Image (cartoon, rainbow, N blue to C red; front, side, top):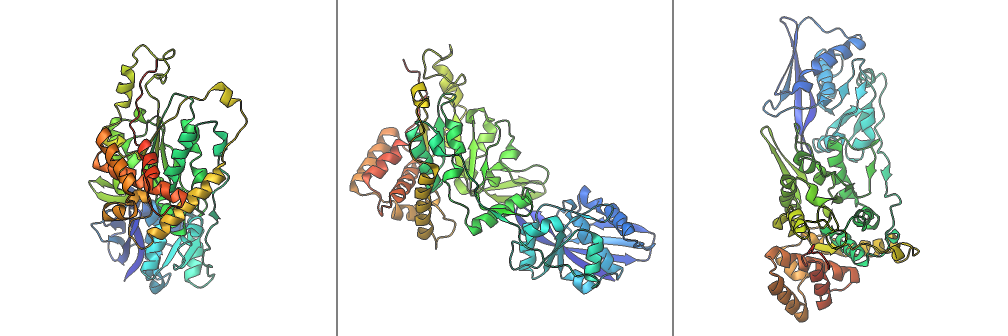
Length: 506
């Protein structure tokens, strides 16, 4: 008799269905797993054998063969333990074979038969729902998987409980979704003294998902401003929350099965490798740019990142996705992020201040920022200088708008864009617009067209730079609630596009 149970193999955030076949046949006693398993899957037979012993189930003195189909698909991870155990129990006629065949299972087995949580329960539940099957998973993964409303999710603590469930001795109730956590109290923009132009750039970046580059001396407030970006962003919509949570599920980052409605804010250290930033490694996992999907990726001290790492960002920032290619896997992850980068004007950091700059000024500025290539810098829609704040300003009481005031305008601009792009695929914000659509929604008036033509001629705009000015101008108009892009919108957008010059002031 050949029994069948289903599980999944992960290709990025996609869970591909895998059929686990088990046959118990006469022959020398053996337990083999075939179908391109990795080391963790091959070791499953020892964990399954020990778990069966804990259940007082004696394995027969026969040949046990487990096949993972399709056989040419690489199988990685310890989540194959539970489906292999179920297929074996069905082959031994301990549980009904028809119940096993209608199940997608995943989970790691402890030697005593208890189930250990594994990553990827959320995309596995989506695949189970598409195949009209139920999902069986560890109890710690149940509240995560139950967010897929049209999937029946059964969560168990150990193999003994599963055995009683399938034999009718103690049915398990369906799992319930975990708590949806909403954005908590964030740092407030009002804490930042001065820096009105940088605050305005932050607001525009949040409203239209535009990339922002800040340059300033050490301690001028660049990191402080970036840390307040989450406080002005609206919560994730339900589809965005599910999409982002699938990536975090594959990476094993979901806590207690809860789905967060707060937008991700990732800030990797400048020593991070290419695999850490764009994804990769042995299992071709998601990188920081994908973990920040629908949120913010903050790169502090941008020139300190390895040049090869920075160059890998160029394509994902343009396309909104990243392809991780390995010898045995080609995986695509979404990477629609708002990139915020900060840099000092030179290595010592004080190039604009003649009395504090190092002896290599002004050449040190060009050498330091020269690590950021022109094509990468061209992808920043907004570039702003963050000057040092005077001691007198620091002593003044907090004033100006709060993050809540700015967040209200940003949320209104997001609502305008949501209605505008509701029927357009792959377009959610002004930063995604291109081609004919961009010409339709961001065509400036005659005065604005004359101004942008003059700017393009004067500073030598690339085609990308020209279109990015139009996108930013459209966002500025949305923040004002204006139907059309006018000259002053173009003027402000072009002002943020001008190249920053880390020259030494006399």
